[in-house]
Amino acid sequence: MEEFIVTEKLTKTYGDVTAIDALDLKVHAGEIYGFLGPNGAGKTTTIRVLTTLTKPTSGRALVNGFDVVKEPDEVKKMIGVVQQHVSLDRDLSVRENLEFRARLHHLGSAERKKRIDELLDYVGLTEEADRIVDDLSGGMKKRAMIIGSLLHRPKVLFLDEPTVGLDAQTRRRLWDSIRRLHLDGTTIFLTTHYIEEAEALCQRVGIIHRGRLIDLGKPLELRQRLGLVTVETLVDNKETRYQYFADREAATSYVQNLPSDAKTIIIRDSNLEDVFVELTGRKVGDD
Ligand SMILES: Nc1ncnc2c1ncn2[C@@H]1O[C@H](COP(=O)(O)OP(=O)(O)O)[C@@H](O)[C@H]1O
Ligand SMILES: [Mg+2]
Image 1 (spheres, helix red, strand yellow):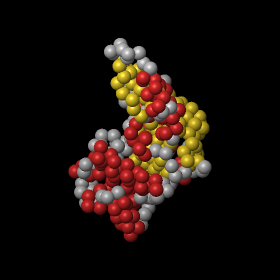
Image 2 (cartoon, rainbow, N blue to C red):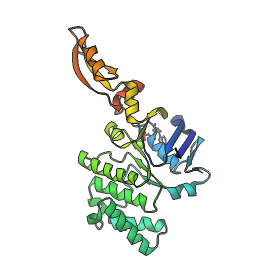
Image 3 (cartoon, protein in one colour):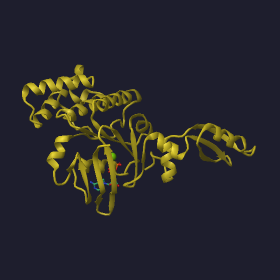
Image 4 (tube, helix red, strand yellow):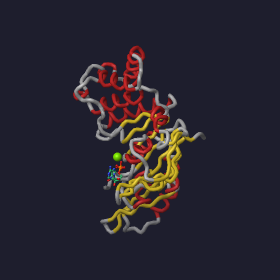
């Protein structure tokens, strides 16, 4: 498997705060790699280091073999990044924003027009091209930002919490755009604190907590390690106990043998939230 991004003991501290702590990552060429973790876990810092926006304190990171500290220009040619907050000029139209970016990438005038039209069509924004950014919905703004990051045909796209604040339908639409990029061969590194997003989109998920990678695998593997089936039992009428089983049969047999005063709330599929809670004792949504 070709590794597109490799980090070795990558660390970034801000004063006393260790934002990322000796991260060893390997992102395969062509995969959608998800970085799942709660607020403050170190997701944005990781993206900032990998995209050369900030320097690591120690350790190193390579993108397609280029060192982010020693060869930032080579790295920049290869990457696109969609930051969490709107990074478009709100007073300009979508097309004006994209024109401006395309010039920064030194695309010639004819090529600019062709590439922008092609990408507007790709993410379904052709009709919106001449609208002012401020008047667009959150999902449209995000799609416009994605186009802005694709003008120079990057081999890897970094998406920092791409669907925060979007409604469910818009989120799915954006997932489709991301899947389409993946099918066209782009390597995708995305961060999220949404369990469903990691499960729905990512081939592999790295779980990050307090700057450290605490687990890594395909969503199914992570759930299998825990047990694919969860039984939630109400204990003493106040506390829910979670137990994990390899399959429904094992779960059912456990439930049948519970003392008669135990209250079984639910038997369900385990999810990555369960994995996270078992690893950290916290929920992904907790601060
Ligand atoms: N520029 C900065 N200065 C000081 N502390 C920072 C800075 N950026 C991030 N941090 C701290 O580093 C930790 C990780 O932050 P961040 O990478 O933004 O996490 P996430 O994106 O997972 O929410 C947090 O404790 C945050 O407060
Ligand atoms: Mg962040």
